[in-house]
Length: 319
Ligand SMILES: [Zn+2]
Image (cartoon, rainbow, N blue to C red):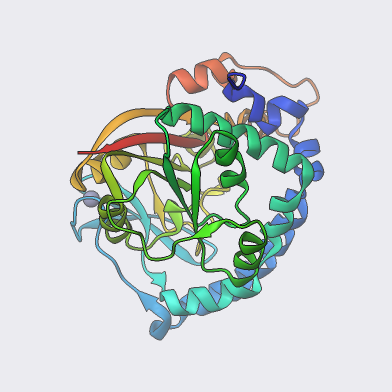
């Protein structure tokens, strides 16, 4: 048996008691600086009509929307029917891919030792939530990167498969002798996981259909996405880091995430939030003050009890 993981153990701010330290120590500070430079390029690209692609609401299908704000040149809208928040227009996927290939500063965060320690705990927490104990259980991690999640799944006796199109990542996966499945084997998996990738997918229903066919009956889907109704996004609004402009094109709440899962024939098993992001909120509320105040609503327990954490963690089952 592996020791039970508590979600506060992989909450960077809680671990280091300082947001600044957490950003510096995990290499996030550098990444933020590089991303800002990149945003200038992306802002120019989205202004060109030939690069724009308009979408309808991916949750309810409506085309009626209101503009809520613009960030880094990208317009964020809210569906008038279901309140789903999304970027419209987005960069045409081909244009987006081209620019992303050159932007790899987040890789340094992923390779950072302390970040790996925290991610390992977060991944094991997810594996415990999946709670599948049968023999020969198979798991596919979509957008697995270097396969850090799968390294953890192996320790929990999973037969591991990764979906990854990045060539550098694929080389490392092959070195690790990890199975690669970029075609979604049919009726094959006991679980499929999406760690912070769903918000990047322009057409999430298409992906959910493929996942549905790839899971066995009763198979489980784990989705971890930024929570648009988190305390930090409610307080910081467009200044919240989850609104990145070009990269995060869909912004789910617990409601809209549940809706899109139901629409695609999944049964929701559990929904919670992880990562309090309390440090960002406290910094914002105490801006410029010498005697910093604490607030009960920034305590992690309160935040997670009210599903106000920075990301959502949902487990759903194929009907
Ligand atoms: Zn809608």
